[in-house]
Image (tube, rainbow, N blue to C red; front, top):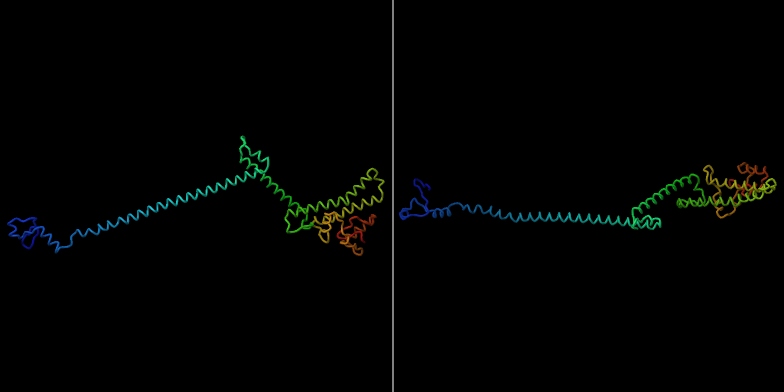
Length: 308
């Protein structure tokens, strides 16, 4: 019920016959609604429409977010699957290389000979790779030991021999070739000394061993000549070995000629100088007092002791 001034206004849904004649202060509800629709504020129904539209507009956003999350999950699964496949491929590749390496070891041992083949058989004749590896390891250890022994031997040889002074030495050659050339020089000098000096001395001694007191003066002189010449040969050869002896002149060339059994070239030697003192002159005077005037190997420090 509404109050208008001093009167009360009633709002009803229907009117009776007496109320229709008077009408005042009675108002139909339908009439009130019409007045409110014309002069009143907008219906409250319109105020709730934006929230309804806003609520309805959120559904596509939720759907998009859900799709993105689903795509991220699928992408993560694909990434981990790809990584797992790559690791598996890499592992298979490594195993394949190891198998090939083991096959190579087995093949190498098989080619080593009958001894390796016999070790590589089990009770039923099946290959036994562990025995092959054990055999190969033993061979490697033996080879390593041999290398170490060779290195020690090489150091000793460089201390005993002056390799840089030997015939055929060159910085361009490997250590193996230098050592081979040195051993070849050693052999050629030994054979030359034996054939030219020691062998003839032995022959004279054997010819007179049953009656040595009756050896002739010529044979005695020959033996002394050969022994002194042998000593002079080796004294010259020592220049290649002893650090206190300086190598000079044609020593290396003369020793190199022994390899082919050549005799020394006397034209390369200096004539003995009797006017000035020298080691060669002292040796020559000592030989003269012993009655030895000529030598088969007259070389002493580049000097020909037979030319005076």
